Length: 168
Image: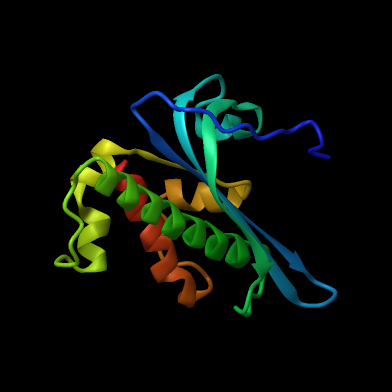
């Protein structure tokens, strides 16, 4: 139960970070997948700032995007569902990073292609993204140097997450 959580919006001190949490639920009885995400602008991280301690971490931040819906993707297992949820959350987080970059006076005219925006160092430097997940097998896979996943169609999605980790 999360009844003890409350949301209060406050002015945030800089530097800002973008905090992103993506999650999914694979209902094996109905074979449907549900996904959700939260995107925060964070001004300060407190205890539990490392990946393994996300359940105990606290931060000062404002919720800017939330979504929960049934997924249209057919998935075979929890790892696949969690991978899709993490990439979806990352996409929303990248959008928020781009908007913050624009607010800070950055040039966001549509001259670079999307892959170039992913690699744009100034977006990473100005507003670091922190991506949380509750899928330990996804974390283990991304931090290892294992080859292609069993489900080949996940390869591109996993590369997006690996590249994001490499960029910091």
